[in-house]
Length: 315
Image (cartoon, rainbow, N blue to C red; front, top):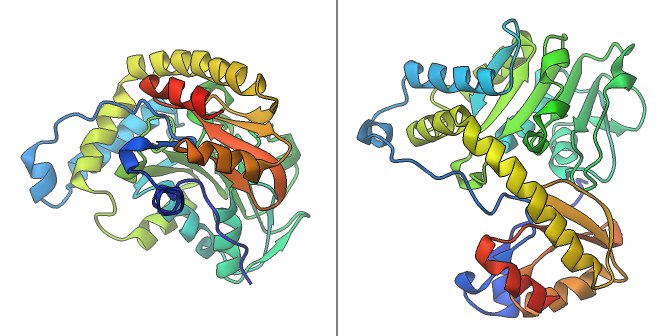
């Protein structure tokens, strides 16, 4: 039986339970940048024509430049990192996969659903979330130096807060390595459904075949390219997130929570009773993230600039 696929989000369920309208709520359960990349106008053909290869190539070239992907490694745009995660187990015959516990649970669900056996030991495949969600722990990659596994998936959906920590440059050329990226977190464009797979051309080509023609919409191709080319916005955003997350820690820790992990997009706190904290916040229309495996863990993303007062009042 697959584990529960609990996630952040689900604000509609919170509204149904606690009341109010969507506009009344702050959703801090997801770790999505609340100040998203400013969405540009999309040419009319982006909506009315099938996506062409020139637009795909331009987007993937922008991704290659932004993440400094080595020339020999492959880059593939996809309709969100989730679509890639769902396809990872099908790149090899079923076997055993090593996935850390207390991490993003879609990886385990995808592999289990495809018939793989989960293990904590060396196996044919391994999944690493870097930085980990929800703990924020970084993965050095040193324990992969002498392994012979056939597939290594490195989920870097939250890694763009600190480009210097990416494993793209030193690991994307290794056989069997696939690194996942997302425009949903750092850029705050979760609704765009745009992600990337970077790495071993053999694996990337298999993914490309599985996704079929036109996997990325015309608007996503245009918006994603512009976002990845806008290094000024990215640098300014990293600076702002650093300031905002320090402000978050100061507010929440004064209420008795202990900071135990996180990134510049979300924080993980230890509290006396996470469900009690979630309910208290929800009554003031603030939605948070709790976890089925630890009743003391509370995760909070960052609020929009005009909602800090609502968060403070809710706490």
